[in-house]
Length: 168
Image 1 (spheres, rainbow, N blue to C red):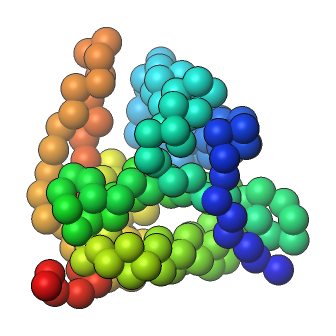
Image 2 (image 1 turned 180 degrees about the vertical axis):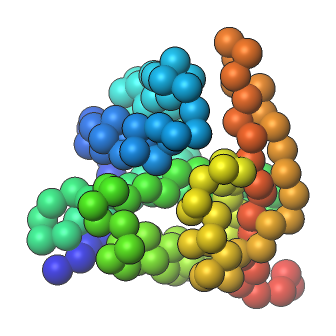
């Protein structure tokens, strides 16, 4: 049985644990170990995660038979009104290709419709094979950006969008 549940700030340690398990597999061939460690510390610090929950980020955990298998973080009306931003969407490496990522996307679509938002929006590393997953389910590349994250590191991303409905 698969279930998607919203997390509270008290539960973010689960996201921290999953990120440390997933990221080395996802980015090990793309980023240096130093950049990977820097980004994990920067993005997945427990206090940072708790602050994000308190400031409007919606975190969801996907469980399969009661076991945490992945997570997603969303932010309504970012970068602009009408968008639902997917900041993070990750599934454990041994569970990729089993429909869990699609279940998280479907959950984000449901949330977007509940909030009367018109599009999903995300960034994906330009060297991440997940880009083809997003394209397969209907996302389109609408741009590229290089984001300076400090210490001389860049996030080199595609900006992708999935239009759900036309703006009113």
